Image 1 (cartoon, rainbow, N blue to C red):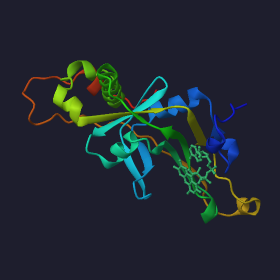
Image 2: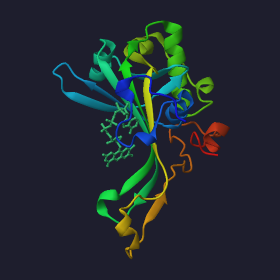
Image 3: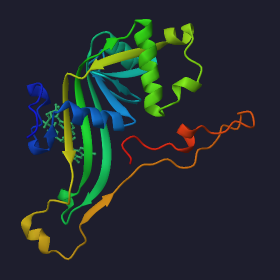
Length: 221
Ligand SMILES: Cc1cc2nc3c(=O)[nH]c(=O)nc-3n(C[C@H](O)[C@H](O)[C@H](O)COP(=O)(O)OP(=O)(O)OC[C@H]3O[C@@H](n4cnc5c(N)ncnc54)[C@H](O)[C@@H]3O)c2cc1C
């Protein structure tokens, strides 16, 4: 039995059996996804969606970007936000055109973000974002200087109103179409790393650390 939605506006209505609201389900999808899409309405009410990196730390999702970013500035001013992440697990080939689909795990997070101004939290958020890209990286790199911190906005979106939606399994066709003489099923998809390519400007003799040579996608076994 799935948990109840934390609010009515995040209750999955279409295909409601695919809705999940448990924090561990939401967190696992947020943590496995490498990109998020952040949606707002701008000052004129125009909907804007930007793809962005993100990281979850406890009960918040952090996003960062230039202090000049229109989207981040609008969010920092208190605009309502919607953040989504999607993991695409398979293409679903049905017998009928309209039942083609995808197997996926997605999360939608609604709320208002706050601008992180406290220095330690800002650094911890940036560390979480770098570590979300590649765990182990933060310890090896130059940490942000004061001017870089100043030029960077970090926003924290609380995980309060969140829903997950999960589709899995074979196509769902109309009963009379199951007798059709056409291939139907799923094409599972996986995204994984290829061989790392060293920066040509790197001095010779620097070996790839284990977190590079042994990189695996979050969630992969
Ligand atoms: C890769 C992918 C492909 C998809 N392709 C299609 C498609 O081709 N056509 C189509 O109609 N739909 C598709 N969907 C599903 C789509 O995301 C919506 O769930 C669906 O369209 C219903 O939208 P709605 O606004 O009527 O949802 P409602 O059920 O009315 O939404 C109410 C609330 O449910 C939650 N919710 C809804 N959808 C999601 C979601 N995907 N993830 C997490 N929470 C959710 C939100 O909190 C939302 O505020 C796809 C989803 C994914 C991830």
